[in-house]
Structure formats: structure tokens, C-alpha cells
Amino acid sequence: MLQRLRYRVREALGLVRMQETINVLQQRSDMLDAPGHFAALHAAVDELQALRAVMGGTLLAEHSMPATQPVISIVMATRDRSALLRRAIESVLRQSYPHWQLVVVDDGSTDATPSVLDAFPDPRIVRLRTDGVRAAAARNRGLEVATGDWVAFLDDDNVMATHWLRGVAAFADMHSDAVVAYGAQWRQFEPTDADPSGAYLWFRPAFDVEALREANHVDLGALVVRRDSPELRFDESLRRFIDWELVVRLAVVHEVHPLPVLSGVYFTQVDRRITHDGSLDAWREFAARLADPADPVGTPFSLRQG
Image 1: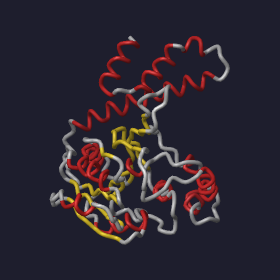
Image 2: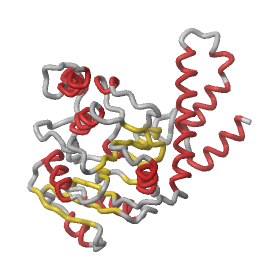
Image 3: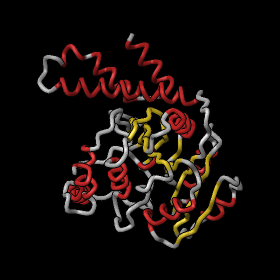
Image 4: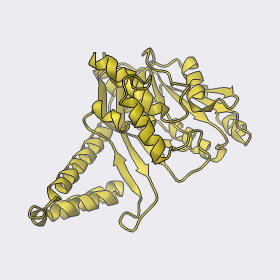
């Protein structure tokens, strides 16, 4: 049974990590007698359940027919990434859900970015130009001109899954009062001997606002927010972790809904990012700010508790 399941999943999605999970489950009888292996078993089961939920949710999204058809704006900030930009835009054009608006904010590119944008005359694509204002301000400029009912985000080095926007529309149709949701994401890291694909699923089936004090578990590319939400704006005083800070402000005001639909693929083997991954020290510093109710970054948590 497990061998057949492993074959079908690998055939459909090429998930090396799924094979590792199945192997763990096959060895569960040995693991039960080994100290500390209970945690590994539970982690393997959780991963398998998350994969199953996302596979099923994505399949349902593909065949959904939302009664209402909201327009979904996608905000993308880019700078000097013309080769990658084309791939990102093409992934939006391949969406099975047609009611979208793509707002591309070119933040002072000096490469072939204008030429790449010229190659996409689709009227649903809106072009803006800023002058090196960095990611937070560039995205805020995009939000100012977005006209959709919902807003999604896409980085220029990532790609959007074909049925993501259809899944968002179906979710909005079923949850008329919802304001914030997040989907699943494949993350493509450097391959290793243990995992030649270098990929794994990034999705937490149950949202935990308190866990945000230590780390953000909702990537911006998997986040969707109603455009009229007052919290939907990036803090331009921050140079790093602007997505983390946004998720915190949203989460302390609104229920954040997990949406088990694949949103896209996140790639890390690229350079010249409009934002940069912080060092471990920078990450710890920001987490400490979130835990401090006297810090402006951590204020939302104190308001929530009050």
C-alpha cells in the first residue's frame, strides 16, 4: 500500500520529500522504541497530511466555478531582474482564472526591464516606475493603484501556480466575511545528497499568531488580503522583514485563514534581490522587537492582548 502511494505521489508531483516521509512511516515500529523519535514520527505524519490537503485543495481549485468573480490584483516590485521578470509575468498570464490585474512596479531598473514589459501588451498589466525607493515603498505605490477586490503578491524571481487565483476566488466566494488568507508554497533550495530536488512544501494547516513572535510562517507570495483592509500597507521605515511585520498587523486584527491551495514556487538560487535575507542576528533582533510591547513593531501584540 505504501509503495503504491509513494509511486503515485512521485509520479504526479516528483516529491522526494514525500518518499522520505513514507520511509519514516515504514520504520515507525523501530522508531517507537528509540528516544526522541516520537517527535520525528509526528512531524512526518504532519507533513504527509499537509501534502495531502494541498494536493486535494489544488485539485478542487482547478475545477471550481465561483459564483462571484472578484478581481484579484497582484502587486510585483522589480529591479534589474529582466531575465527572471519574464518568467514571473508569464506565470500570471497562465492563470486559469482570468479576472486579475497585475501591477508591476519597476523600482529604478537600469537593465532590459522596460523592454520585457513592452513584450506584454495585456491591458490587465499596469506599469509603474519608482526611483530606487526599495521594496516597501515600491509595493505601497502598487497598492495605491490596485483596483481589485483582493490583493496578492508575486516576487519577480518566483512563479505563480496556475490555479492559485482560481482558488482564491473560490475561497472568497465561500467566505464573504474573510479578510486574510494564505496558501501553500513550494520552496526550491539548493539540492543535497539527501534531497536532490532541494524542494519542500511550506504550509502550516493551522495558523498560529503567537508563533509570529519567533518567525513568520506566511510568505508574501502566498498571502491574499482584501484590498480595503486598513492594515494593508508596508512599513517603509523597515529595511528587512516587511512581510513579517505586515502579517503580524493583519493577524492581530483579523482571522487568518489557511487555504490549502498551491500558490507558487519560491526560488532562492538568484541574486540582486530588491530585499535581502537578513543575517541570523538581524532575524533575532526583529523577533525581539516583536516580543517587546514598547517597540512599534511589537505594539500590535500588546493591543491584541489588551
